Image (tube, rainbow, N blue to C red; front, side):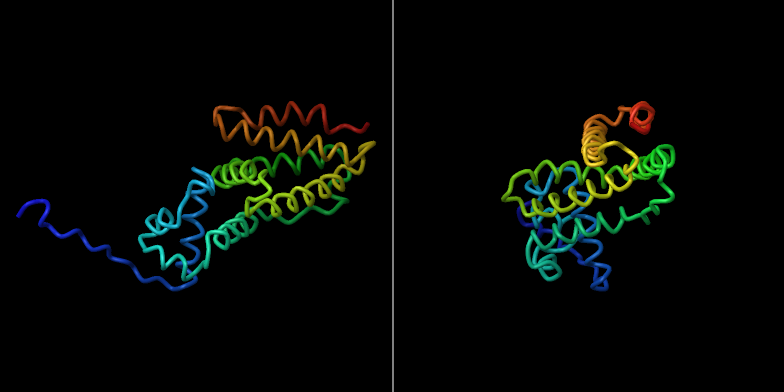
Amino acid sequence: MTAQTVPPKKRVQTRLAPVVRRRQIVEEATRLISISGFKSVSLVDIAEACGIRGPSVLHHFPSMNDLLAAVLDHRDEVDTEEAPTLEEIAFPSSTSAYLRRAAERNLGRPELIRLYVILGAEAVDAAHPAHQYFLDREERNYNGFAQMLSWKANPLWAARELMAFWTGLERQWVMDPAVDFLAIWDNFAERFFVRD
């Protein structure tokens, strides 16, 4: 028998409960998008990573945009931590400590940070399906940071400065994991988390 007459191996598709399959698809899409970006990942790529065919992905998510929305929801679900009360972060030192813990938590989930950095860059394009998501999320972050920084002379400006530093440092760390995120954060925090 020659190579041309050997029939291709039939893919064996494992049957999973719908909720389990849906979760698998979202997790694989998250992983692939965090590596290559949304625009570079196809339905076929995701299906192959799950060991299924493209129509099976479409059974759970009618379009790639629907799947992207599920990926972003998944990221937010995994990234959610109970926000501190304003009393818990009423002082520069307590705000700094809270945000350092958040940075430590994020560093333990590099795939999610990479996903956010890559999708955030792609979503600068107003036609990107996640464009509005990132506008809304950044607005929520600015407002949240401004509340945390109420002890600053201009909390809104301070929130923008903090957000710019945080996202910039995340981008540098994604590009070069040798960047000592926490050492740089600590250096910044020492200067930033003081009353004006």
